[in-house]
Length: 554
Image (cartoon, rainbow, N blue to C red):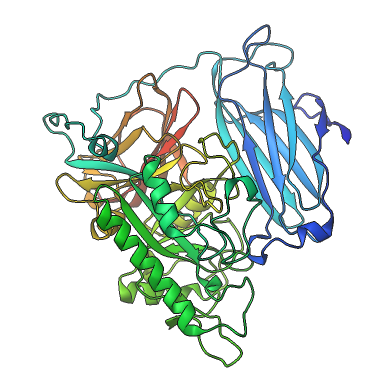
């Protein structure tokens, strides 16, 4: 079906007419088979960083991808797409509506590479998508290069040693004088196997699987990830599916549910012991999406849950109330458990005392990471070519502004048997040189927030402030010298740099402090956080961990 939409003209946006080719619509009966915990509105934006070339060199197609798994009746998704100039001014706008009924729908939006009939000024522009089905809204935005933007000057930075070269047996280069004493390990911290609703064969994987029905378990996942070059993989199973159900299995055996979790821990230990150059992690993804929020717990040796069978027996080791995030944070803090906010939404998730993304001191102690980017959870690509990617930087910024001390992560949430290989994105952790990659050293790195998120599995990003490494918290008096250190794969370079500033506990909005890799600033008295973003010349993005600075009163 083809729908033609004409965009109303405003003083900022020229008129655009575009055709939307909608995917065939599925029946509600087909959609009803989707597990309950994945019935949520999804919207992604795929943009080409560079134009198509040719007669109109800046022309390109933006692809909007919409889905609402398990939708019981047809719904309209309203969307708005904006093109923002380097100064933040909106220079073009498209909008429309797309019918959804349980199957993905792609909407191509063609930009001819002109503004008011003329070639636009060169620079780094931003494409922003807002899409909503009823009250469920999603925002995504990505940078694009127009013309030949100014290339930022970058400080010299010799790449840190990494797990890739170690696993290939290559001799490590002698570290440069004054180099940071860390080795970088790249992995995927969010995936599922057949212990919950993952592990589907790539030739027959159509989203989340019925719990415990797919052919492949954690042992296969670990072998696959290691064979495909990852340094570490976390299999994070849904905590409420150990009864073999997406609802509640009244006939479930508590011993079997708890035993399955322990079996997963043993498989991870065995895989790590057999291959010391690879870290296999097994944990849980706690919570539900609707009126909840998913978070990973990386180092719990017990299953936490709320499901009971018909006899009232708990199908977990430790009882945790569904949706009570404040109580969960307290338990995690007491036990020394470390967590990650998974694909957080700006509203309606991680509610504490009626506030979305609500802060507690225990939560601040327990939660170390925020997933800033995910490739499609239901991708069947095994060659790193997935184009559907979701950014959660807005929600992560809100958590930082609420007062959480979080580093950024970039994962894949694999439900099919392509663990870590749907796209090139990774979470990278810095482990001290000479320290083995183990669960203990990994958890130590997370607690120190020695982590960066990357869409390029071969790139590195480190930020320092007055010599302090990203992830650190320190007091400061006088100027603050911020340095962004980037190393790309051969042939790659930094196309843009952004240093972001915010105030923990303010519950406000972050701002851009600088677009230079080296910046000196005199912070106002009080608490601040800073992090860096680098966009490569191929459009892939890296995020450093923040630094938290308390500036003394002058």
